[in-house]
Image (cartoon, rainbow, N blue to C red; front, side, top):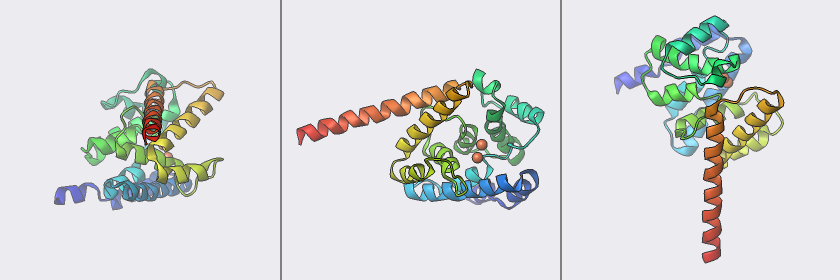
Length: 208
Ligand SMILES: [Fe+2]
Ligand SMILES: [Fe+2]
């Protein structure tokens, strides 16, 4: 137990973030940590892990490109072709390896939550979904649709994931960017899940 407590201590990490992130990104990281903790409370996940992963999800975001690339390729977090060619996606993969190698984080769920926070994947764990969505609804976010996303996040996390992935894919297509296989597979799996649920509900409705 003592080991676990020490593992998620954040004081030294907060000092690192303060030194290595802009004021704005540092604030974002704190807000994501808070949103993640609240979502964890809502859905019965481990609040301490959620806070920890939320706080550290962008830890590599402002490192030089070369360093992000080195960290991305050093671990066993297998970037796909589109990720390799999309610099903005490197920081999640690099971040997972950074937490593992620099902070000795061994909890694969935390590592995966950081690794997949930009792209998603099919079969995401509850913690992975929480970090993905916390990043979308943190206090400073003010994009069109954020109010709806905040509501959805607390009503139905999987519906929030489907909406977030649909929006993400739509905006990448508009910019003629590459879409990671992980993201496409995640979109398909959440959509399929929603359709299966819909038809199960329809059947229930017609039999009652
Ligand atoms: Fe990020
Ligand atoms: Fe972020």
